[in-house]
Amino acid sequence: MDTLFLMNSLWVMVGAVLVILMIGGFILLETGSTRMKNAGHIAGKTILTFGIGSIMFWAVGYGLIFGKGNPLIGFSDFFYRGYDIDGLPLSGAVFFLFQLAFSGISLTIAFGGFAERAKLNVYLVFAVLFSIIVYPPIAHWIWGGGWLAEHGKQDFAGSTVVHLTGAMAALAATILLKPRIGKFNKDGSANNLAGHNQVFTALSVLLLWVGWFGFNAGSTLSVDKAFFGFVAINTNLAAAAGTVAAMVISWMVLGKADVPMLLNGALAGLVAITASCAFVETWAAVLIGFIAGILVFYSIRFFEKIKIDDPIAALSVHGTAGVWGTLSTGFFATKQLATVGKPGLFYGGGFHQLGVQAMGVITCAAFAFIVSFIILAVMKKAMNGLRVTEEEEIIGLDMSEHGSYGYPELVKAEQKLKAQ
Image 1 (cartoon, one colour):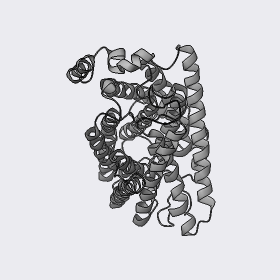
Image 2: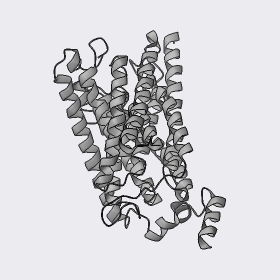
Image 3: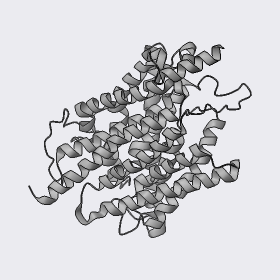
Image 4: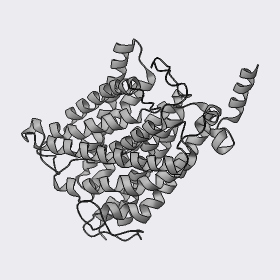
């Protein structure tokens, strides 16, 4: 076993740990962006569903993605047993864990569309089905040698595979679940059901930002020539540009520098650069992130205008930014860096790669949304609804689903004040 193999394995193991720690970032993000009465529920169900997703990935997900099969799906390597993989420059077990983490992140994103109103058992059942039916086919098409890989689809670390897939599942959920009580008035205007802790959301963005180095730089799968450093620079620059852009546009339009919006801008920049981080120059990374920060501002306003209740902005941060990030390689992928597919429009590649990227966005988004919608619609019939009762929603999912509050003393004090 040579030194490079061991170093590659260690590096990707570090990347896997960073990606799994991003689950903690999402716990703080979703908890801080929602109301106190649901905090314990959100934290607990996130850990539980990651556990379910992990078991399903081991049993069938990995095989459906990377197993031998056809351009649509894999049919081997179920119940992965830790063996190495021919031609892979690192431990097969480490690669498996790294890919498991990505699957778990996509599932966590999907659940953003369920927040504050879905039954706990809905999370559990959908975690199983998403991990078998929704995520693996798309991952196989792009990363497992499937039909989009054959066309040269560029998605280095998952703007489409992870983020857009999760966002489309979230869209299906939020449509079927309908808005939270009190979100929209009869005249169509929206109320701000503000999250209870902006410090949590800010800390979550920092944790996710750091974890993204495992997400993107770890996807090099190698320490050879230290190319991961270049990928990390692009990742950081895009996040920084997204932060600044969202702050500036919110300040210009709203007259105030909106804190949740600038935090969403950072995440949008990270999501957007995820597809292109290994294929574009640093100046392009800044531009990609900056455009993502502007897009996320208008996207959040658009979804609210059409009465889509998206408590943690999953549709905009992961969906809209995921689409832009995927398309961006069709413009900015360079001849030297485009190890997959062809150069982008601005580097002499014409419209070919942009067309491939657009085809990937349309087919993957449509598949994730339609399949998720069908699954959830069937679940709605079979499980006597997806949503808790009105009374349970008003009480909060901490108490109605778990029998205890995430902040027991604070909530009891608040209830006592209201009673007076």
